Length: 151
View 1: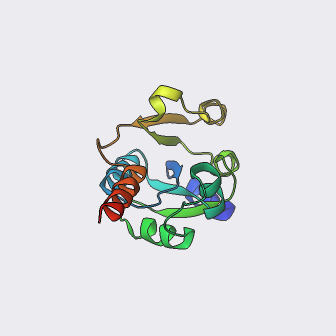
View 2: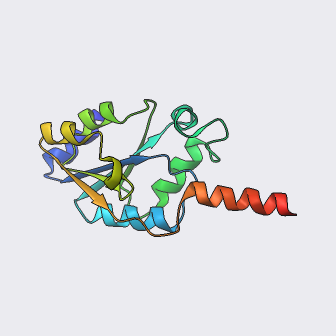
């Protein structure tokens, strides 16, 4: 990753970074990633490892393993690079990429972006994008479980 970032910077590319679990990819994720990509020249997606997803979301998650999640994300035209990170927070990845723009979803409006100070310190800016209403992986999983128990 350091070599790639150096090459992109040398080419003058504006780097956009976002991160997340992206467990069951849905239209909300795709719209979010497309909008994120429009903010720069290259979109790098930091993908939480399976272990970190379990720590953040619980023992039943992720539904899809990290290699499958990375494969699906990487197939999207708007995503230039996918990298898996093991930590619970993306701090090390942020320090490595030093993004020009760091993107989070609208759910961070209420609680704030914990990485904001780091991004600012590194010379970048934080953008918060609106979420597509009614689209969430947790909601999708709950509907599938409810449907299965109703049968």
